[in-house]
Image (cartoon, rainbow, N blue to C red; front, side, top):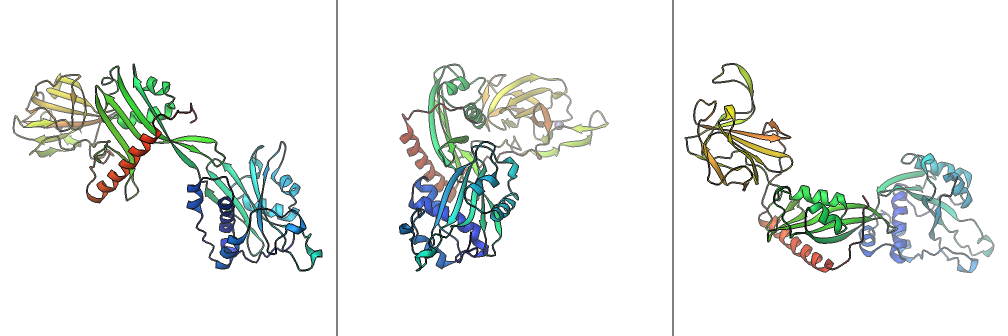
Length: 454
Ligand SMILES: [Zn+2]
């Protein structure tokens, strides 16, 4: 191992260069799909001369004297960690000298414990072939070890490279993974879970889909035989084409008694990711904080002296003073869990919105027609009217938000935005939606590889 001062590697960018070199090889060669290669190709070497030399290199290692090019060439060597192997043994076997191996491994240990290198793990060694001299007798010089790369887990890549000063430095990066869209559909006979499973959808994806649609669908009551679903999600593969996990649900649709509900995963300009229906309305809906019009907030959540009982106690809701008969709205889509008399609450309604949220309405004068336990209600639908039934000093709505059956301060609840996209954001969503629809159509009829990889 000679020539430690590799002339074109600037100290600051040596690790970046090693990354870049590998990418370059792929670009010329094989392996990675186009998208990955293109995304990584722009090289920030900070050294135009280096970039220029890179473009002219071939990745093929020179094997015979006759093949040795006139300039030094970079090439990779892939090795697998064997049974009982250590990284040091592996490097020595590959011709790396003992001192270099020691310091390279030391640099790596900043990110990866050398004792945790496992059998079967791939190590990519990078060498620079010795430059050809005019004097043919110097051609058999050893190649120079530049560094190596290792993948401690499926999403991480650690590269170790020698800097200009001869010292090895390590850098950790997120691995480039392939996200492949997968589509599935099915008819629901008993439950979405079973229908999904029969269509080969991994349980984790079905669970995500149920959670996403729970703002629109009451999975315990709404599903009827003959309803159907469609889903698209990402399967993530590593460079070797091995599936590593199931990614996000990018589209989900459910058809209930002929009514179709679609949701699309979309990234907004500010980087937030949310789910929207086909018109750009957030599918995760916020509960209305004030489920009544023209009311005056008369008491907030917290400790207060009770107006009738006289002692200080926790007020577990929000009070809105309003004239008797003022309409009260459902704060969100859901199912009426209870509608009737309930002690001090008087006429009381509780709505279950999804697995997390419930809202409750008390002291009502009466209920809107057709509103009873089991009724599906939509956000903004009138469910009843302000009154003063139960333990109440005057006409008002006592409103509660519950999570896990417990009253919470509605102002403290971290609720989904419930926004509807507008203007530029809507336009970009609609364009994205069209693209997704085309992708869905193109995936129609493709077999879903049975996959329970989580
Ligand atoms: Zn109250």
